[in-house]
Image (cartoon, rainbow, N blue to C red; front, side):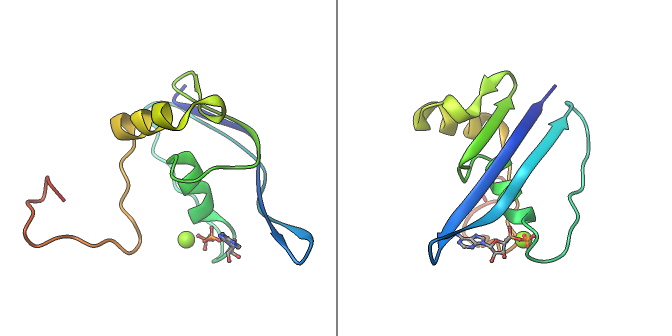
Length: 104
Ligand SMILES: Nc1ncnc2c1ncn2[C@@H]1O[C@H](COP(=O)(O)OP(=O)(O)O)[C@@H](O)[C@H]1O
Ligand SMILES: [Mg+2]
């Protein structure tokens, strides 16, 4: 197994209320799988990808990546995992003319 999310919640406080951005997300991905995440605008796709990609944190639940417990890792260890395994093409990306394709 490549990664597993168990009961992931993410929320923000708004006017004393808890507004959920992710609510009880469970997901298992095997190595080599090719996956699309679909949903209406505002449903939380980018938030979920940022959590999976270790660019953002979550408030509750457990996340295992290659049998590392991402939710318990120190920032340094997590960013090493990110650097070694995660590639991101952002929705609004900014390529630099002066860099090669590889450097970008
Ligand atoms: N930091 C934040 N504070 C408050 N609301 C947020 C925050 N980040 C995302 N949201 C809200 O969470 C919802 C999900 O956003 P997002 O993950 O960008 O959805 P999608 O990518 O599916 O369009 C949206 O309603 C968005 O406004
Ligand atoms: Mg989005």
